[in-house]
Image (cartoon, each protein chain N blue to C red):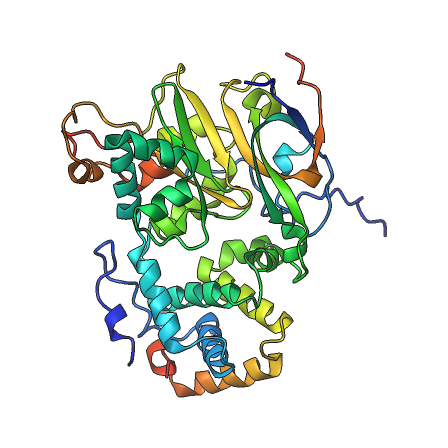
Length: 214
Length: 95
Length: 115
């Protein structure tokens, strides 16, 4: 089988869901057939498909964490990121493709959280594929109406004095949240800080980890 | 800072592929920033050329969208709305 | 026999912002190879101009809420990718039909059927 290099552990360290030895489903038949037809028609090649899978596997929350940690430690970069997040992340060396990105900064006064009520738009070219809950009916339905209740389910309880800004990702832009830098991290360098930045904190459903919980 | 520019989302309910959420239709918000132009997804979805349209990020209060008795009326929702769904509007009246 | 008046107001099933729903689910799975391939086929076919992400969404929406509840995310995606490719004339329904039948004859599992 030509794709053995994909059969090891996933980026999260879990085994991939076993699909090779389960009964073939109708939709898997369709995937195989569509892929073969696209290759035979010259639309793509097997190598291009494997390269695209590898490119998506390389995109994961660690990329976003590096961006956030730099914004925490480099004021000029933070300004560039808030002005044009696509350009700033590309300048850092991340291949985000044609994605148009907006960075949203969380502070004591404002908490941003991102949802896509119409489908499941996500900054996949920076953070990788979205978590399953992001695509769920519950998250898509409730976040625009009762964001504080949804955040509480994620363990984020905000004071009334903090304004919640929900961003419904309805069209061409994608969003990454810059969580607030945790207290007790004075003097930390960007690499050490990046370990505090979780995927959920960049969606707005989490906070960055604190030094004692990291 | 200039005065906020208020816009009302058209309350139309067409069939087919559109990117304006139903819960915002008929609601008034203000322009947070202007983006685009971007090709109209309502045409792209059917394999047609999309007319280039301005795209506006519009900010709505929870009070405007869900009513004054919502738990945190000053919390907000931002959404990207294509220009043909927006009409200039007066500021919404305070409840 | 008189029918009840139709009360549909035009709001479509996928346009779910603000609707009541239960707790946000927390279970998570890693994507399997066949799911990653569907994702890659979508990105490659659309980047080469055969259809757009808007076309992908249009078919997903037209598949209706039953598909959303009973099919997995990438099962819905391959169905939509396929329909968009047929609409774009990349291959015909007959070509797909014959290839799918051929695939099923190769073996009972994904690993065996994948040449």
